[in-house]
Image (cartoon, rainbow, N blue to C red; front, side, top):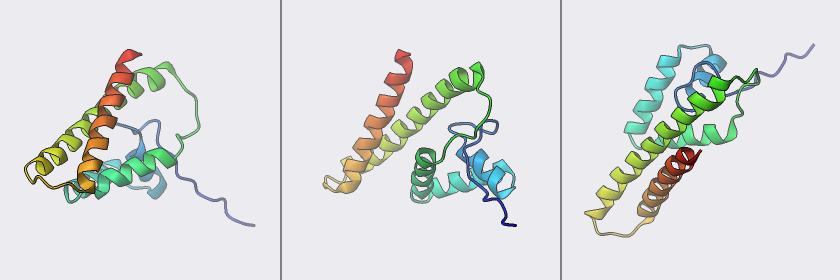
Length: 128
């Protein structure tokens, strides 16, 4: 008899931003703090962790389960604000580095996209 395929979901319980680290900890059966530290270290050493987290946020579905008011409104609102601030800060750091180089390259465009995405998320979330 074939074994059931294990699926990766973003966590509803163990979430600070979008539940990616919580979902990975459930999938690999490791402590969520270890996963979070790994993502932070990857983000600080060249932004790979940031892009991986963003990619997993976009492709991984939220774990099926009962939706309650705090899950949808409070956590989602706070998570979007935090994620928007992180995007804004990350983009501004890259932008400032590029501003002093006076060179045009794709990293400058990526920084602008990140900044505008962060501002968009903050503005959109605060209108609700």
